Image (cartoon, rainbow, N blue to C red; front, side, top):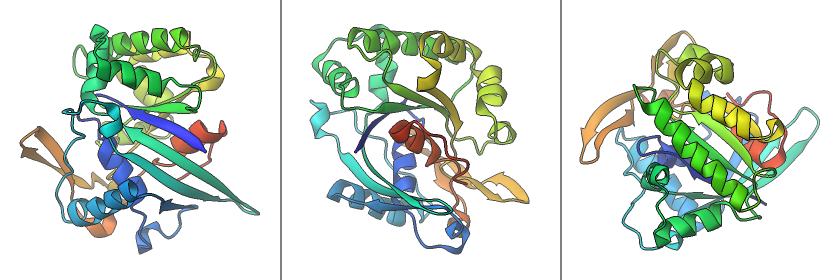
Length: 273
């Protein structure tokens, strides 16, 4: 069983990413994938319905609610992922909790309210294999903000005796954007070195090399191999700017399985595109 936590700031696409993971239709565009995902529990099946009835209809998912009194009110998503090898298959049972972005954002201030305490206790418990950290911005000041938040998170890892055995998969999300898409093949050098160098430096300094990997993820993907325009449109909603799928029949996410596989097993996948 791989217990993984997904964290990241508001607007980093955590819930949409999990919906894309849950929704794996037998569409022609996805037939060549070497993995199969099965939703296990009711929360995950509800996420599949949201992907089918909201994302595929060109709308965007609502962000994870921050108006909860306890993290145990948040849904827990459970997946069975089958990885197909040339001569074998590997099964991963994955349990994921998706936290609201406000929890990540407020880590910078070291908030000690009960919700944050529950988050830290659960996120850093010994039965958690690792954390998928989604980052998405690089405007002025963002690199400093991310680095401060992750410095505090690393200190908490140390306090909870997880500094040497908790894997961190740090991903640049929404990499379908034109300035990011060419850097997806080597995200550490071509994305983090360029856009978030201070954040990368803190992570490389504090986290053991065997417990740290950098990834690029695109939940929406691009329109095609010969048409690298983002397969998403931007729209304004009650929570600000959000993304929606442009063409449902061309929905092919990029890199959504690789970080989960590594977090669960400590082994790298060659490709999940």
